[in-house]
Image 1 (tube, rainbow, N blue to C red):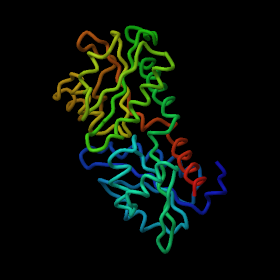
Image 2: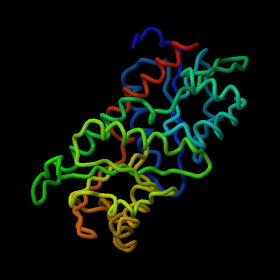
Image 3: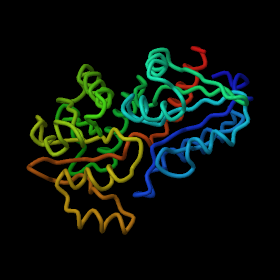
Image 4: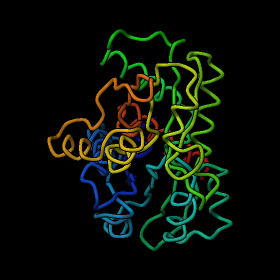
Length: 286
């Protein structure tokens, strides 16, 4: 990336956020800190949809002539392609145009705002998922590190019936990973669509399962909901969470399967580069 090209430009990394789990915003703050450290932009700010600082308040505080808004979301789903663009003033037609071309802008008297494509649909996310899978079994090699041919890789997504695009990013990653033929199989499971999280045990072709939560943050869904749906007791999850411990012990044997469960993809250090790539793509399409 040409750093001089953005020295009068602001970057806003926008997450969903929630007041129900303190860790929800951690990944956004992690990458904002890293991108500030690099000094590419005049300023780098965090913003959220469901917690402070809110996106409109952050945009109102920025005076840079160009502001790139990168949605730190997994998919071009309900929030990233419908709710947030509408709130920011995009009509339905311009939203579709933006997602097809890589970036679309609108003006207010002080600045031009460019809303980029979400990070989770970038091609490099395949490498992030595979790195997560490799890291978790190496970190917890019990009773030994399984051979990849002995592992079913399961990507856990959110999904929603409100927008058919929500699951596309997960399904696409499953197809890409299957094509690489690294693992015995790859499958997708979801919180709010079929196949559901607990069905992963039935879908797995092997005793060894590695589950990658294709989520932005290690928050409510990844730390609490998914471990319970995988068979951990709510009491144990809450106790471990209160003690500051991982809510899933790697590996855990459930339903005659040995299960490794990784952190969410959103906290992977490689995501800083994906954010920059989304800005570059959008800038080239203006």
